[in-house]
Length: 125
Image (cartoon, rainbow, N blue to C red; front, top):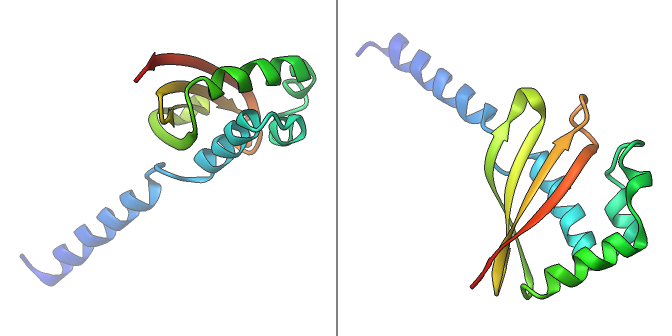
């Protein structure tokens, strides 16, 4: 294989690797919100919500979800399991020491703030 073709293939591979979404800003934002829910921190939860989602959140709803998360034990982090980039939708597996929860989110069109945040419990370990 000539040097030009090898260089071109390497550049394409690096470009594709740079476009992959694993562990990007989206995961950091969702992890921050999930940790805030776990810690029953209302301000931390709504800090990354857009102006239509933030008013829907109540202290009672954050507290109830925090209690539910604590039943699964210590929060250990997120793993991205599905992505729909054109729709700005992401699904994560939230790991706890006694089980998992599914976190589904949708970002605003700018991809900076959450326009939807939904948590579903999985089976306990």
